[in-house]
Amino acid sequence: MELQSFLGFVNYVRRFLPNMARVTAPLTDLFRKGTGYRWGEKEQAAFSVLKTFLCSIPVLHNADTHRPFKVITDASDIVIEVVLLQDIGEGLQPIAYESQKLHPLKRNYPIHDKEMLAIMHAFNVWWCYLTGASVTVRTDHQSLQYIRAQPLLNPRQIW
Image (tube, rainbow, N blue to C red; front, side, top):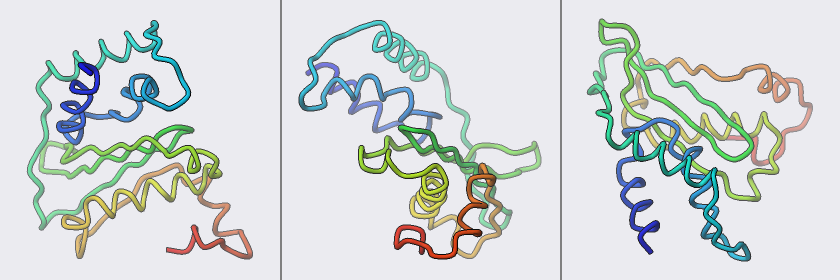
């Protein structure tokens, strides 16, 4: 019960901290059906990283809607992560972080679909900033080139 409360707090502040879905994955896996609650080294390491993150001061900046935005995405086997950045005169500075642990069905997606899912997630979460703004998206484009070469797209790839 205490771990669930702790993870609830972490979820509340997750947009201020990078890579939260990846870091919390070993802890959230403890609550899956059919798995026993076993606290091991990787769970302790994830808990320690979370404590360190929570004790550090995140430096996020306010968005300036008159400047262009940059979205950086990353997709892996278990999570998608996106960062919203903006050049505010001191180089690129983070505006917000977002990460999401993938549902088991989405983990079976090919990597190019996961990369596109990360881009779509960024635009869904930050639509209020990105609508009508100049946006550059940086992602692993090598896997996305497959979509352009594909003769027929499946419904998931049409957005």
